Image (cartoon, rainbow, N blue to C red; front, side, top):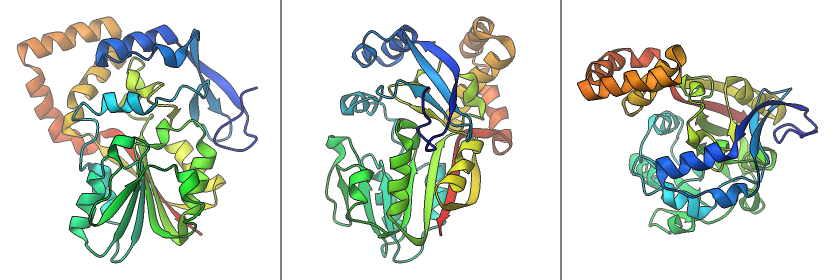
Amino acid sequence: MVKSTFIENGTTHLSGKIPASLIINQYQKQFNIDVTNVFGNLKEVEIYQCDTSGYRFYYPLNLSGDSKFYEKLQEYDWYYLPWKWEHAEFSKLVRDHDQILEVGCGKGDFIHNLIKQNDTIQCVGLELNESSVKSFERFEILNERIENHCKANKEKYDLVCSFQVLEHISDVSPFLHSKIDCLKKNGTLVICVPNNDSFIKYGDQDVLNMPPHHMGLWNTESLKSIGKYYGVELIDIKYEPLQDYHFDFYFRLSLKKYLGDFLSKSINRIFVITRLNYFVSKYLKKRSNKIKGHSILAIYRKN
């Protein structure tokens, strides 16, 4: 019996399997990254679903990428965008003199921009990629896990946030508890993850939503369960509108949903060659606020 990594003593059931060879081939083909050693002799990666929360996760749990894997992905300029929808939503919660912790801050671009908006706040970033660790004039980035950081920083921060991080964590429970322990009473926890109830759920060949990149698959139901089982109050859930840099991604997966894999690839190729995708982008831009985009953001209060 595979135990839930989200809820203590939670039961799970097997909900799917993916050939390890498919994942290995796709990382090599799309990103020129060799992940063979991650999987060893493993033939299949299993997907389990927590019966209580609906949270789905990949198994075995030891398939997370190392720092070299993420350094390769960071060579793509789209991997760490300095300011995104979730950053703007978080900035609305910031008050003067707040102490803020960002878990998984990359090179610190978001914190840097946040301080530009409000120079009274104090910020700390945690990042496991050693190449990103640096001390700046107004903040510092520590090469430290949240589980270790919370031991000396209990109830220190007014806001604790992570953007596109939780889905990379295999052992969810200690990660979440440690973030909450760092919060002051009535402090705010903000989590943003890919929304697996949005169009991305049709991307069963989207290798970045698989190990060693992603270890968990979050949606509205599982994010609501954090409020229920972790002693925090769910304040709000926000859905990202479709962003212009996801138009092509959305179009490809929408074709696949209705037409299947082979036919959708052929039609998408025709749209690119004939530049009909330009008109698709114009249409999507008009409707983007009505379409659930890539990510979902949850806001909690520590009682």
